[in-house]
Length: 237
Image (cartoon, rainbow, N blue to C red):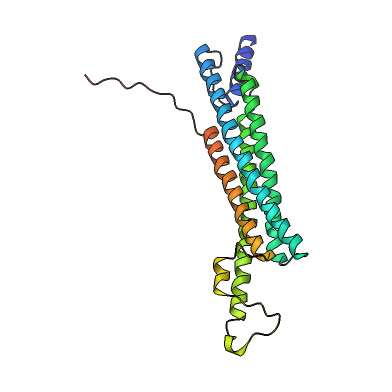
């Protein structure tokens, strides 16, 4: 009975180590521990590289988006179109959260590097996968809000064009009437109205979330896809 209890305890320890990032069963094997340590080092470097790209890339795009949206509000002195402003502002807020989420990936890479020689102390794979999936959800929600703001801006431009389409130029235009010109469609990102700046801000926010989404999916793939060792192929006789 005592011997069976020891075997069960050893099996549980092996199973727990197998759930660690980069771990499998048979940790007592020296060659296996070497492979696991190398796998953890490679994962740590990958997380640091992609985490840094995501952090700085999203930070740059998000700051530019926030500055553009704030500038358009300050210049006009009011929120010109709330239906486009609030979704864009929400997407920017989520983008800032995603920036700090990628900073967490950088911190995780440092932790993986420290535990490379002790695989049993590495973060559980399930915890890392859950963290990555939460980051993906953040980027999807933020991208959806930004696209909603862009579509609202385009819809307002189309509505403006349709309401003024029936007014011939030779009849004159009433004072204060805002008419859509042909160049408005092409210069919509560069005109001075808050509505146009909202579209520019939304496009930068979509780019930020797209970058975060692609990098998070790649990190998730690197963690969940089994690492295949190279198998030597025998030469043909």
